[in-house]
Length: 232
Image 1 (tube, rainbow, N blue to C red):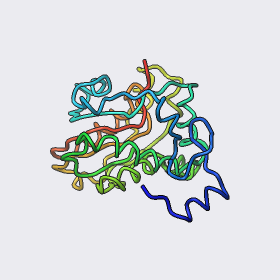
Image 2 (spheres, helix red, strand yellow):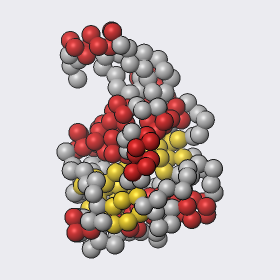
Image 3 (cartoon, rainbow, N blue to C red):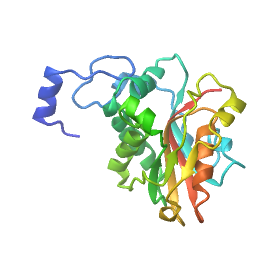
């Protein structure tokens, strides 16, 4: 991709930093430097999206079509800095850049074939106000810029948030999100194939809760895409 004069000038005056190592990005790099991209632990789940470690979390929970994450995530590792930048340090640009990166990566293998629309994982109004944005929506916008799929942000809402899932076990995570979502516009997704987008998959509890609510609409198909998959 050709880099404009203004992009080069902006990078000179206000250098952008890699969301993982903090090093200076070149004008033709986005979100993550080439070195960190090279050393990232990729899952390759998109090569077998109907049968991989991630999609198996959802078997028997809701009628999942396919699922994949770009990289393996480990708390307190170098890659965790990327997620901290997305969730806690206001790096909206990183959200959208990562959405474009994962979309370009998966698009080469027809991961988005047959999908009608994207639904970003909803967050409560209070959490959105505190953070300033919904990181899943920003990731979805990056994916949209590549796939041109519409984003449906008014189909399901987050009713409550009972604290972070980080320090909870699988049973506690399931209980924590029980009844957390509400389908509010089921007609919009009836008879459609929806891509549910979030930042990280760990036990899959939040995704299962949201997808199960979406499946209350008539004849919905659900696929899942996240940036990271937590190693277990």
